[in-house]
Length: 229
Ligand SMILES: [Zn+2]
Ligand SMILES: [Zn+2]
Image (cartoon, rainbow, N blue to C red; front, side, top):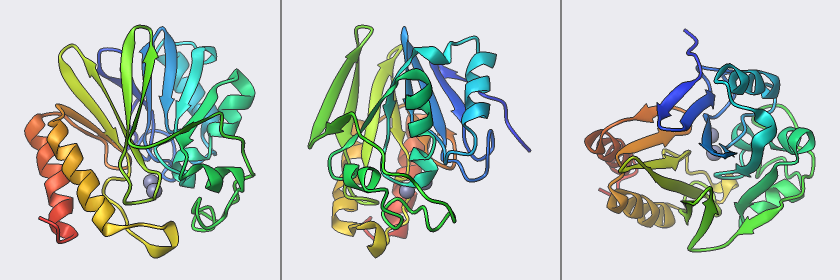
């Protein structure tokens, strides 16, 4: 059953994902701080649907100034070049995952898995460790380096009406050699994410977890699965 795009909490929306736009898409989130910030961009086939979803929510996709990419996999980055071409949005990704985009690397972007390709794409802003802070519309968005799934994976958080909203897209893995995954990095990263004690987790493929307890249980369940808890 397909879901509709909707508001998660004050000015934060889900506009794409496997249950909303296309089974191949990672979840696509949108933050409205006057300017629009897109978190991930889907696999690339559903850019038009994502745009119409943004319109359905009475937001103007031409205001997308910023695309924050959580890591270099095609299900998250595929739509980004198209958004940049249409709206002049700037692409942000961690410096360790940037070369995969800039070289259009078929393995590191996982494009071969999806039987597609990703054309070499310029990155506008390369984030570096351990964290970057963007101030938009007077609000701070923190991009935390959380390697593990890929070397340049980031998690993003901000506060809305006294709740911490955390975007940790492929926190669940998989951890694969061909992606440059690293279990001990992942162990430290997921520990950092637990310490944040977020109220809401916006995940990359399995949707949204809405209490501190649910967020915690979700992260711990994967730590158990990977044998670090
Ligand atoms: Zn993914
Ligand atoms: Zn991934």
